[in-house]
Image: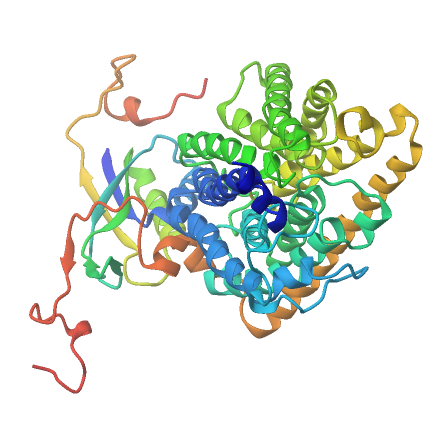
Length: 117
Length: 436
């Protein structure tokens, strides 16, 4: 069981959700975060104060999946989030010590496999 | 006191009328920022500032074009199709009373300017979230002259509709049908947002929408109440009808919401306020309070139906200017033809009171204004499109118009922002020739 973390552009978040849905990856959480991975192109001016926005709005997906779903999940994230410009984001895959489904107490594989009913 | 009365009658200016019209002008000007709030709440957060700025842009551009040539084309002389150029750049617009009123023509000009401004701002609702700001300003300048001033002349300035007998108290022709059907044309020429029909595009702040609608209603008392240019009976009637009609629209809208979704929605309520105010705009000074209440109830039906239907089409007329303004204005203009009452307005009866001809005059306006607004706006935007791109690229649309068009955000946190000063030594800000 792995945790796939994808940090993407907010305007691509819906495309990512669509791609994940097509890849049949169902269990997803997302949050709004700020960060930067080298891009610093955005300059804004407020009443004569010019600033370079060091942190950009990003959306962070966290997806816990069984091992055979890791590659499809990565592909879906790339497909949905890529524009080709600096700032498209990153994907991190980390091992998961344990996963528990709160409702049933199912652990690991059972916890990350979606229930159909 | 008697000496003062003599002076008043000599100059032809009535101080009471003038005082009210000064206040009414300020009330109507406030409607454009109010519309900015209303519209900004309805768009996604990344387009908040751009949407409001289109209203601010309308104030800037339309005031200048109105002073330069728009007012003259609308109100100089009584040509059939268009006015003259005698008042261009406010030539001859001074303290002498405007013909048919007891207020200075200079004040009359300013009051009418606020109408032109808000009508230009209304059209922006069709193209928000993707039209380039610069292209919109060019459009606003040309549209205020080529479309608004022409329709204003037809309905208010002695043009063929007014002289033919069409009754339009406060702008069903130029403001409401003018903006609504122009909005439809603009949405078609500019095209849908890239995400339209693919994603749910939801209002980002319902409180802005409600606040904007409330301030619009408040300003509308100046809009309708001022359109008699006096403190006389028609103004009082229009003022009170501006309370009655939207209230009835609200009640019916609540009911429709309940029937359709079992819940009364807040954004529906905000929409209903606008629809009611629009419906009474042409009819305000011409129908009795009782009929005004019926008008409010009736006006909800076609506008509600079009709003429900429009979102299922490919036409991304984003903020439903056609439904809220075009259609409600159409309803109000036709309603006069049925229920105008000479006992209340001192001008003319409608069909219900035995004057079928009035309905004919109203139907003519309800046909001519939409056709002219749609065709002229369509052609105008096609021509502007030849000279410059009308809309932002897909990538820019994705990032949002606030950052792309204005270099600002509505909800900036400032976290991680780096102050750019010459001393800070950030390359971008240092001139190439002086790289110290």
